[in-house]
Length: 454
Image 1 (cartoon, one colour):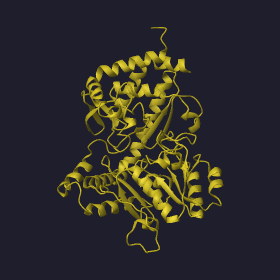
Image 2 (image 1 turned 90 degrees about the vertical axis):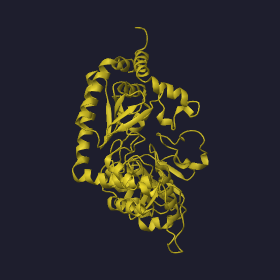
Image 3 (image 1 turned 90 degrees about the horizontal axis):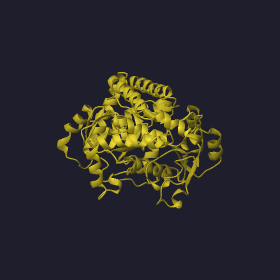
Image 4 (image 1 turned 45 degrees about the vertical axis):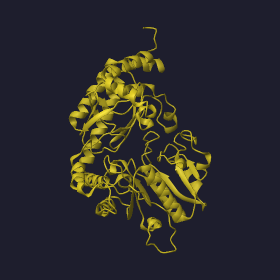
């Protein structure tokens, strides 16, 4: 055993504990593989040796089919800003249950749009959709229709959903993300490094073929590096001067960086913004919100000289989703008024510091990227940069997340590295996370594995 590499010993120990405590998940996975590719409904949901299957959740906790409870900081990849089964959302859905799941032009549609417009700085008009992917592709279509141009600027390291056009440049190069996407899909997508003012200004200056600039202000997919305020201001100035539509993809940052999302956080107002995830706190709802003149391309009452962009969808205004969004946004307003956002930011910052201290105590360097209630972890002492960290091995981070699952904390999924705290997380949860981290680093040979890899 002494001759076995430390990384292998670490993996064996973590996997053994995981399989011992999750036999029903293993059985469901074996059963599910016969009808679901990989036994799951999305690539991210699978992780080795097999995925967890959940039975229920409440507040900050989720419980798997074996009855194991976890402090859930993955939050189903972000939507659960209010935790599982939040009262404000459930009560809103229940109040409108008698409407049925889908009716034509529900009255809730107007109320939900009014509430979103009262919160989001750019939201003069709103269109609802089913998902973040639909919201992004629709926003880009509106921009192209409004400007009469085709090109879109996208930044390296940014993810904008599953449309073919934007499954490119998620890494520090322009490689497509996954198979099945034709090269022709990317012909009108221009890619640039993020936070590089000179490169951006050099690209857009003097051009008349760029319809939109699309960006995630958190740069979440690339490692949560966040936008430089100076960069965002420069992009806003340049796009306004060149007649380019600036689109903030706030599918992740919406209601997370603060009540008004990235727009409020940075004090920069885009022309259009897209929302999903936390918008309906678990129900399926997306939205495009923005300038009235740009949104007019979808307006059947617009003047005949206004270009018409098609956008529709059978389930765009489902009753439960709209009611959930009203309940969620009302609760976000309450949290903002009562200091909830500031308190959660402080708790997340303290948790990040606790993680770094715990790792350093075992001789392992840890870098934490954090924006408000979101975190991502990197086990390295290399100088921080998107390009450098994108090339890091992820073995230890993945095993760390799985080891925490063995001790009742789902900080993230091993395949994800996306940590999302919620308003449901209380002081006792953060104390339990700190205790679990200390236990994991003491129990498993992470230090030996790190030294071996280093």
